Length: 231
Ligand SMILES: Nc1ncnc2c1ncn2[C@@H]1O[C@H](COP(=O)(O)OP(=O)(O)OP(=O)(O)O)[C@@H](O)[C@H]1O
Image (cartoon, rainbow, N blue to C red; front, side):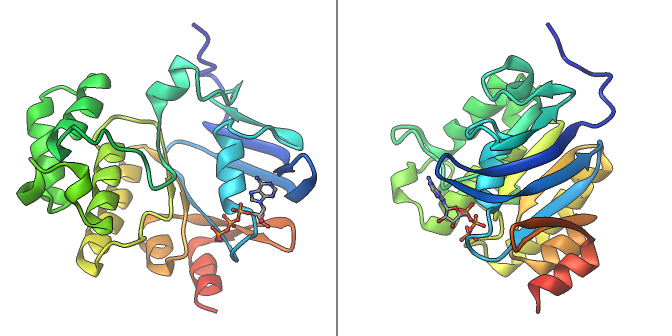
């Protein structure tokens, strides 16, 4: 199996222009992420953040340029990509007949997590979901559902974690725990790419930002990105 492990960067976008058949949204963009980097994707509503994530995941073809993961064109259907990339990009889908604990068990076991029972307990505890562990998704609040999706993304091993506005609907205490958790993940070598409107997330968990502005991509350090979000 090809893995491209000798690639210079873990994720690289070169002269990437994103958009739809009838409309170019932004570009050309250049982005290089190595292990342990943490980049926020920021910009006004409609600037192209979700379009960029969808292009990086291979859901949308680039209008121009290319994007590679471990030196190979992105392909969400490839085994390497599925093993190495954990994604939380939408409001997510649930199996309505599985409890919250069963959802986490499914992901953990599917990704070969050792001692998965303990990991499920730890994630439930971290996201303060233990009281609803045996509840079905349809009985949860929107914030609780968001926490389950984040727990399911973070319970599994990954080289790259992609998150789309993870701060949404989280109360302040959980948000602060999440900032620390993401910073720790980076210290352990995991790479983060996070669409966010939250300046504190940028400051505390990430080291740079890709600002999509006026159809261009500009790389900023985390503090400059946070200040742009606070402008
Ligand atoms: N399927 C589509 N076909 C054509 N244009 C689209 C399509 N989906 C989105 N767009 C347009 O692409 C632009 C970028 O949208 P996108 O959702 O990527 O923005 P965003 O930065 O994620 O916005 P937000 O902060 O509101 O989530 C918008 O002008 C939007 O109208």
